[in-house]
Length: 317
Image (tube, rainbow, N blue to C red; front, side, top):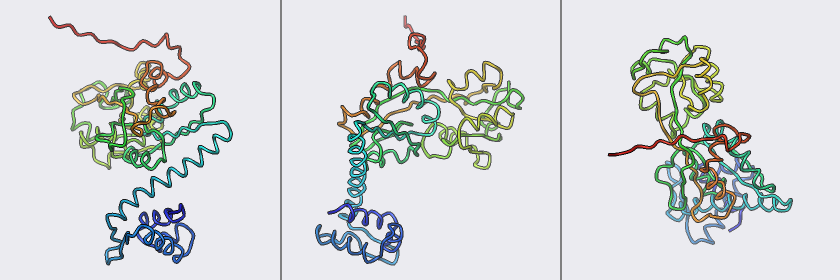
């Protein structure tokens, strides 16, 4: 099997037809058909057949589709790593949820990158629903975001940081200073960051739990942009408590009161199982340390000695 053959086959799987695959690759249909024929001959499997409803894949064809994506991702990663190694550099590719990437990643990655002068860090904002496929295809080395649920056995997860999402409004908003029940919350205009547009994560979970209609949701290009509109009294938002604390203290925002106005969640790191020595594994371990949590909450420049995490002790008699 050659990379060209696998790339042609992956395009057919992705596009659902040889014609569209050829168009996407910028080659002729006969060239794609030739590559598919060579794979069929080498593997002794038909891989797929054409039906009235489209392409029907054999069990072997489905397995090859998964392996092709993984092998091509590994090839791309190898090219990048060899190029970086030639320049005396290592590359760490991080996929992150939008909430983590905007608020916690800058401080964490600035501090982590200082630990290794030869490390290049590449951060991309991705839908958490795609984390597993990105890691299994070697398109990313580590993913950080909401809890992955039941991850693939080939992957392992580690808690990174506990955080709280709170609901806030401007001081002049109708809900400021009064208990906000579910019905009142559902009736409001919600101004939200891009994390609300994904399936997984604490913000989509809040919207589903409260039953907020889609026509009551406005999604902005960043969580900061949504917060700016909230400060103007135009709606309600769900934001990280440690990023909003100063606005609440200054009186620019008001923390809502009621039974469902604060929600606890945990960011997790996800990477390939058995990976214990790579930069990705090092970041996974480092991200949950007190110094890293300080950097995520307050920036990499804050002195660690000034960071005092809260400790709650309960005594039973």
